[in-house]
Image (cartoon, rainbow, N blue to C red; front, side, top):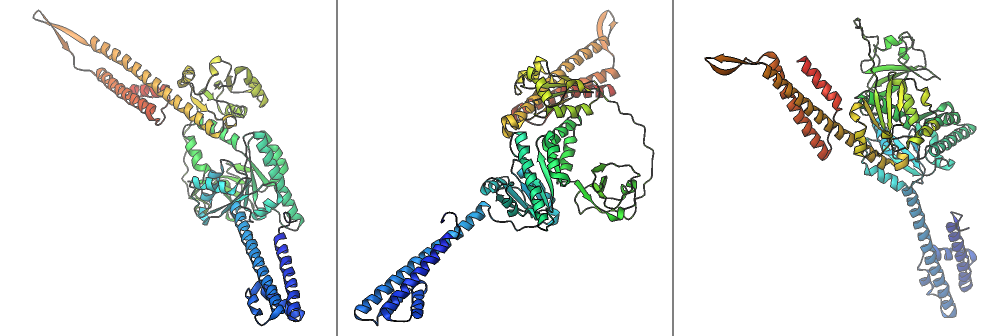
Length: 589
């Protein structure tokens, strides 16, 4: 009873106090002859108020005086004992309350906050982005509920020195699957709920996300049964495997948005590898530093076409429209008419930095020049093996021109690759544009082995992707391996570029010497043989200039290669591209 009832100590103290008062009152009545009512008040004063009660018995003499002093002493001693127990219980209760606050077991009284369920290595970046997003509003409260100690989560956030920008981060320890823990973080009044995927195994992590979504749906239904509105915020669930997305959508219904981070990052990698510089664009628009996406309903735009809306924003770029109950429509037709309930998707600096004009801006229409795009076959190289490699290959097959090649180099045995691709649901024969090369023995080896990487001839590929799979080595080890492979590839490209430039320099020196020798004219003068050289002509000046340019470029390339080998500097483009650029410039000259 004492271990299960939280009020057991208080009840026991009250019972002990009442017993002491009753016994003291009986003793006082026996030795002093007072009424029971007066004796009870005397006992109460002696137990809890007046500890000098024993000194009030000086008027009693003889045996009755001695008994009165004994009773008074016992009552005062009992009062000291009860007071000590009371102080102990109060101190323990306050300490337990502070311990609950320190461990994050108290209730969150916020409204309109952002709620994060789960904890992973993405929590620091996620909190930082939410703080940047809430900066224009003066900051908001961010609540994190995870089944780990609150002190550890606070320490990790403090170690990364995240700038809160007016926001406040509250950590609570608990499980998102427990109804009481969800109520403790005020899930019903949260503005947005983010469910993080935790764990290395994709299926297990998605199973936990699915259970969390079901718990949120159950809490929503419970609130509606009791006359409430249900959950106020929208739910965003992170998944590790895109194949599990339909199941989570089926469980969560229309009120949930799923984000498969692993698949999205893979697709962004494919596009960034084919378009140099695109990674910087993604970094700008995917975060809250710079410009970002916003959706908002503008009643003043109702009835206008999308072509007019494009000319009505000075500080934003309209990109699409979201109609009620439908998906976002990017780049709709210019004849699309904005209807009530439509939300306009724009790219802007912040949600309070743009506003539509009263009418479309005047534009002087011109004629666009004719332009035809010529697609060249690509030759790509994947270094490493990911769990969703089949999805990456399918995405790449939709982008590249027909006849392109994709080479797969990894530590996975060649005899197991067909099985792994089939397990992922990909049939090599169904690829439309890509030719998959993965059974050559040279495509199997250690990722960080320089000799094996040199055998691949990385300068012959138009794009190289170094893949990371944290499920086998962990996040830090996998990232370390990717960094090592990238540095090795840069060094190989730099060294081969230097050799190619030196070889071309020697070739041009020989050609220049041959041209100078052919231009030498021998003129006999009075029986003596004298050699006269004609003035340097235009092609000789071009040859000398070309040679000096190649020497300068070779020296710069050698210096760059040495600096990269010593300290790991910036990257160098492939040798083939650099040599081709120099040849084009020389021909133009």
